[in-house]
Structures are given as C-alpha cells and as structure tokens.
Image (tube, rainbow, N blue to C red; front, side):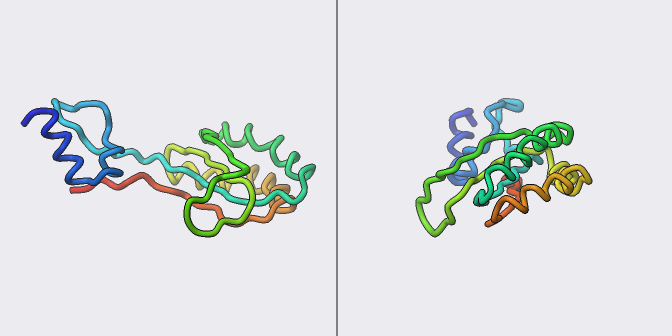
Length: 136
C-alpha cells in the first residue's frame, strides 16, 4: 500500500479530527496515532479584583515552571461559536501528563498561592483535557 493510500485509509478510519492528530513522522513508511500522554489544563474565570489577581500572577509562573507546566495562552474574549459562556478569561496550560498536572495543582506552594486567585476571581470551570486515545 502506498503512503498516500495509507493516509486516506487513516482519514477514513479515524475521521477528520482523528486524522489531524496523526503524527507527521513516519514509522516504517506508515503513519501512526500518537500515544501522547500530554494533557491541557483549561481554566475559565472572571477577574473581580485586578490587584488581588496580580498577586496571584506574580507567584504563578515560578511554581508552574518548577512543575514542568507550559503556559500555552490566555484569552479575555474567546469567541463562542455555539452555546453559552460566561464573560471572563480562559487560560490553557500544557503538562506532560495528568499526574504532572495534578502534582502541580495539589502542591503546597500552589494551594497557598491559589488563595489569591480564589479571593480575586469567580471560577466558572477548571478542566483537564486528555489527548485522543489510540484506536484499535
């Protein structure tokens, strides 16, 4: 089977979004699904006290870095295409695994720092999003 045939096979088998996560690397001439354990931490909240939130921000990045987290982005005006969404900020952070994310989230230094966030914001949701699982 040619590489192009395999690519179309994968597209048919996994659908468009599943196909998008296929690694661009080739293994023995074949595409393969990523077995990545990377997770994304997504928080959505409204800042009610900017000065209080700045105290949180000042301590945030050193703790995140110490736990191997990678700040991906934030958006104060995410565009909603469907459904309802509270106004506020959405933050996305990447971790090598759910375990690493939870180690950061449950660390004594983050729990202490999070008191500033909780006092200065209204939390709408905090989630961990996993990668697409491998398919048989």
